[in-house]
Length: 135
Image (cartoon, rainbow, N blue to C red):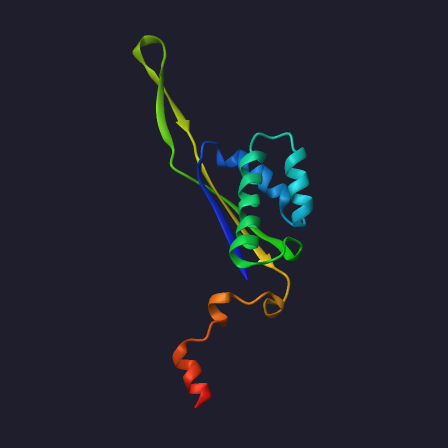
């Protein structure tokens, strides 16, 4: 089972965020979270928040345990660029590009999905099915 979390329009250059994301590839989840807390990069904060969001999605929405999750992929894409200008001498202007980035994290469950707790909506039997079973 794949669990996804995405954070869009982070007001940070994708190049800087990719440096943090590349350092996490291949690490277990616990080690990745510890590395993000101790990393001396400003880009580590949004990546850590997105990773925590993905873990919370797996635990709360899918009923998975945190220790059965593995980091499958981290992608950092380019978002919209805000174009501004800075006035300089002789009536000219220099352009300023305020870049944004999108962070997408995909987690994978390493355990067997049959061993997880069943979804209560799926285990409920309708009245029509009960009457068919009783007949």
